[in-house]
Length: 399
Image 1 (cartoon, rainbow, N blue to C red):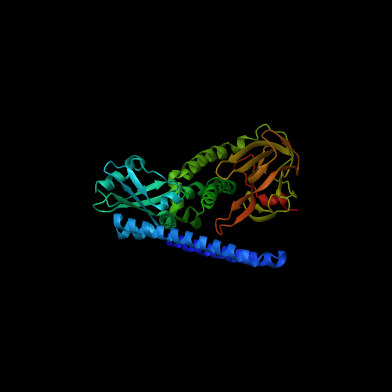
Image 2 (tube, rainbow, N blue to C red; image 1 turned 90 degrees about the vertical axis):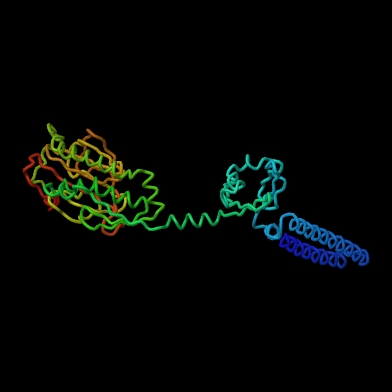
């Protein structure tokens, strides 16, 4: 209260100075009677002075009253305005509330305290020393003055927010293990391994990145993950949804791989394609091959680069990975199949005929499991009709 009166005095002093300067200006500009102006100024200044004195004395009287009724502790809290004070009678009816409540638009005088704040029952009975309550959007810690019907309200909102932020930033370290990953990839062809990585391992990396986790690969099937308590609570609330998602993706992948060579049965589009076909364009416009490995090629390119069909054919299947939101497109050229995995967008549908070098979509983003940086790549693969036949993807593009 004293701080507010001090601010009021400063404001009034500024106004008086402004008023004096205004009167002087009027005297010189419009020949205002200086005696009349001086009389007006003196009367106005005295009026302001007596009003300030009145409010100051009233404030001091209130302080003495609070000190006499509630004690010196309550007086100090009331004076500095940082703690709210409330009194109630034997029927738990609120009889008085300090200025802090009025400033925050809270008025419960003549209302039942226990109806307004049921949490204080244990405090009034002496079962606990303090309780915390939520009033509007702020949190208060309430304590009771012994042998008196007085409650002290301390606003602890900022303190709680700091404590919550501290708790949420506690470090959590974990290990992600892809069960049976090594067994699943040990005897598979290179393109099938690439599909396993694209459908199972890559979604784990995307999931970690989307949740703000730090992920580092330890082995082909193990990742070290570092996160904070807030993120950990979030994924617990989601019941580790990545587990169900990768399990479902794994089941779908098993079916996709076993059914892959059946998709080209009876297809006549692009039937001239063979294991000797070469000199074809890369499936990514302005792309470059990051690496060849058996019947697959990992091709990087600029963001939103076009993905094209390397030969005449027919789209025999389109799949969307619900974890990464990327597309896989399978095109049959006669009884050969080419696959285009990790596409950001597609412009074809199942059963559609495509011409050589025709666009089928755009390249998709991925997270590099070593650097955790975003890159844009396509995983291309080729499947001959005979499972025992081996093909090398680079032979398709060699001049």
